[in-house]
Length: 159
Length: 264
Image 1 (cartoon, each protein chain N blue to C red):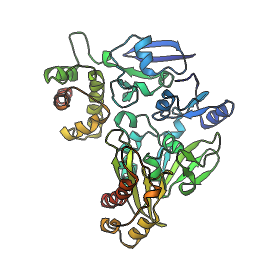
Image 2 (image 1 turned 90 degrees about the horizontal axis):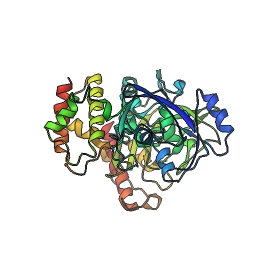
Image 3 (image 1 turned 90 degrees about the vertical axis):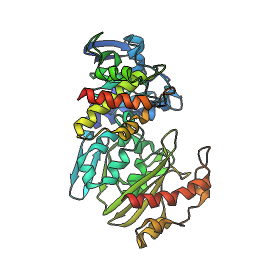
Image 4 (image 1 turned 60 degrees about the horizontal axis):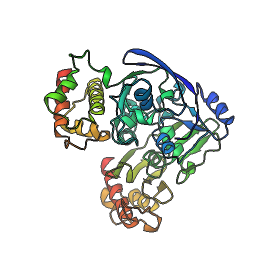
């Protein structure tokens, strides 16, 4: 067992977990934050994407112990309040950027990460760039079209 | 995943001494290959010594004609480094094409080359650019480092700490990714270096990354995509699987070499 301490969605959280606990299992099973999904469990689908120290990572491919001391943000932490969704969440809703919704938490976390990275680098996040950036997030319902539209819309609203 | 014991190393000497005391331990860097391998129970290290938090391994520096990249630098860091982009644009572009953005945020250069996956990108960069792999005890030329599929010249408990890339006159990388896994079916790094033209191929060889002498000769005589056409690759030396036959990969090698030259 190992003791892990990290800040999750602004709150200090700490627990004793088996050393081989994945970050996604810690988030879902220990913290009961079940918005972060496990799709493929093989680092491909991106349903488990969370932010660790401001970077989008696949929580199924990182040990909880490796996130010791980190700032973690999950889908539950992006909205300012229950009736005050994040601009990217609103954009997904307004552009119908989902069907079943299983991949959506990971899509939103990847989307906000790409917007902030492109902004920081002074690069333009055009449609082609959005599609390239979604390489690690798989959706089996929508065909991506409305997801791409939603991210472009959300990006403009985050500006 | 089997049980394991986790330890976070604070320095290189802390990491190597900790690993030496384990029964069957492994270094854990970004974990983008090791963790999936452990989940599949294809690896069962008794201990994991996490080296991803060692700050001394996270630096990128350019000193004259040499770019030195710390072993714990992530692919995202290398891809986004203006210093690397200026000194060796082909290296920055190669790093930016590994996996996907979330994988690049965790995966490291040291982890990639220590694993020496036959379809990984970085081995082609190291071999094609004639890099030197720095470990906690010595320096190993790339020509001697990549011994075979998943095999390197690293001794038991030896740890990669940095990779030194000499600036090439010109270099380009091109890969044909597997449409599903995005690993290289064939990836070619072609470079004009101080020691002549070097061409390294990943993803294709049945013994891991290799230098392609015939392409080196052809491009040494004429640095152009045209020169790669018709340069033969022996299909007997190629991987063959459901994604592509050995003959298909052999053909792709010269095609991707041509694209690598175009990218240079």
